[in-house]
Length: 236
Image (cartoon, rainbow, N blue to C red):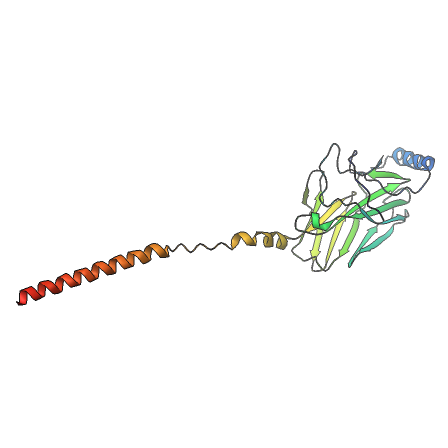
């Protein structure tokens, strides 16, 4: 599937696959807003209002786009050896929701291990807001370790995210808004600094001390020779 480009639009809304006709989508969006929910309708991908900062890694490769009913369900997918599962509780959305998952070019994320972008849409309209019940995301990846850190995109940068538990081979994240997550490795960051630690400074001026030792040895020899000459003269 061809990657899709991102563009900045209001909120953290991101474009998901259109699942209904335009008229039906407008009707559903109007019903959502009229019902007083925390959701707002929008369209297109976008980190935050007015943000022009590109997201490291892009997150433009679509892995899956699935519809989850109002009774809840699970969205699963794989990227190479990595597997993810997204569990949506019942009642989180007033209508069937289209959930689209995209992944980044991990090599473009400093010290990155993996990453995932999750967006929600109802009737073709991307949604932003706060969910009543948290959604749980589990990622299985042999490259993840217990010391790795989960970070979330805030519109201008990735920042540490507290609602996550990492272990060797997996990470579990709970959230209540459509997020962009990355998993980074402090070990990778430490490894990147190793070359700077290879310069050895012993603090021992070997050459200077060697010259001093030679000079002292010469003085000592000269002094001993002078002493012998004096002794010879006295004896004669």
